[in-house]
Image 1 (cartoon, rainbow, N blue to C red):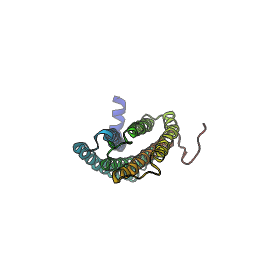
Image 2 (image 1 turned 180 degrees about the vertical axis):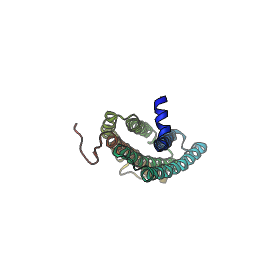
Image 3 (image 1 turned 90 degrees about the vertical axis):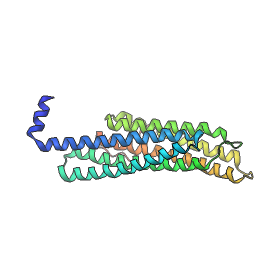
Image 4 (image 1 turned 120 degrees about the horizontal axis):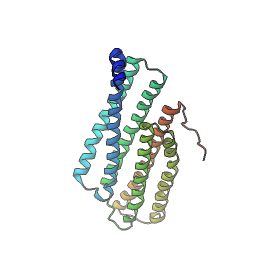
Length: 238
């Protein structure tokens, strides 16, 4: 450890670069923690959609996410300009950039979910049973996001590929909700609130499926960082 310290003291530019990258990593870690917390809080809206304090906290955190998104992307650009990074560092910087874009989009999707829950009343007859499949989708997206983030921060391509494979299950859960809604309510006259519930249940399942897609994007960014391979839009073996 003393040897590393002496090297950094004798090469100030190296120490500055490493400190800068450490700050960038800390900012990204904070962004990841807030987004995961947002997803967990949003899942509780299934039973607490009228909780004003919870909704207010979700809104406050969304502003922090947007601020971190700008900060991280600016730091990535500045690092490229200031330090002329070698190939491996450049891959890491571009991976931070891509991961941050995906995390900010997840934040937007969680905001959409929050708004949808605010319009619903799941206490109406026929809607209570949809709480369980929606919670299942939340659990699956949470698992995918955590796996993708661990793949990136823990430098694990195995976890990255596992995340990508998880997406099929989430797609099936979304499709099941869509088909169940059609089976339960097609051809029936519905009151206004029931129609609002149906539309928003479809929307929430879609938003959760899109969060899963963002987790896949992050896993692909992790693969790019670790292996230097761009696997986007490629079919992985079974």
